[in-house]
Image (cartoon, rainbow, N blue to C red):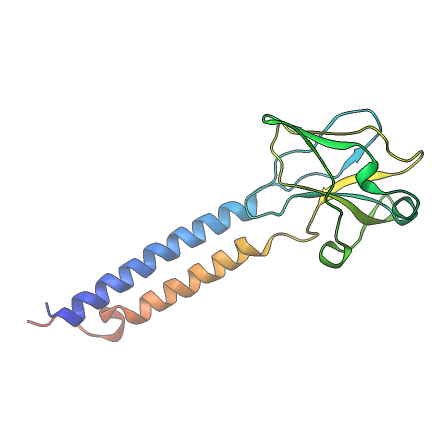
Length: 174
């Protein structure tokens, strides 16, 4: 077998293996459940749920008038994790996150929580009176990375097929 033939076989095999890994990881990440919408009430700890792979996490959303009246960083919100208690003070970014509708109310991002695990609990001690606060996924749609992995995996498999000598009708050289 000559050197060019052997190199083409090794490269195409490597591309096929990378395609299998990319498609497998992308498919697995795609089927993971997202964080469910959770209503947050004052002085009670709520379980947020685990953030799936490649997902940016969770954000607290409130009615727009609530954000205008108070500063979300002063709501006394904290995330209790296995490592301790972490105060939440990163404001939500409406340009990046957008708005949501829950139970017929338009909501805007107030506080970014980030990635969470199954054991994490969220509590807020000083929520404004009669405010509606929801914990929702930061991105409205499914994460793009799993889909990109699957599409990239298919592209890698195609490239591997094009490079392989047998796909071009070439056999081994003596």
